[in-house]
Structure formats: structure tokens, C-alpha cells
Image (cartoon, one colour):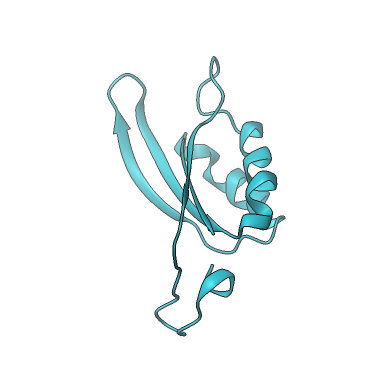
Length: 94
């Protein structure tokens, strides 16, 4: 499992959600952030199975966070995922 964290323009969130939904991603955490030089942004955190990390990352560049740069994103490992409401673990919890 991996956690993909990306910073995007808020008005691009619906497009992002649609793009990753096409890949089977159901949940995303969105946090409002403010960058000093670029103003309001949305930080999205997406927990995904290792098998779909690359397709999700490939979906990100269609929504550039900044015109002169590729997406600002980070991929980190998750040791364990648990959906508290249902008790599901691993990929089933994402």
C-alpha cells in the first residue's frame, strides 16, 4: 500500500476525483492549505494498492498544479490500513 499526497488547485478537485474514480479509487482526503507564493490550494491524500500507484500517478499530470511545473506530489509507504467503520484491512480498506 502507498499514500500519494499531492497539492492541487481547489477548482481541479472534481476533475481529479473523476480521474482516479476511473481507476477504482473510492476515497480521498482533502485538506485546504495556503501556499505563501501561490495562494489557496488543496492537499489530497490517496491511499492506493501497490498495483495502481503508477496509473494514479499518470492520471495526476492531466491536472497541473502549476503551469511551469509537474505536479507536486509525494509517494510514501503505508504499513497497514484499517477502515474503522467496517474493520476491513489492507487494500479492501481503501
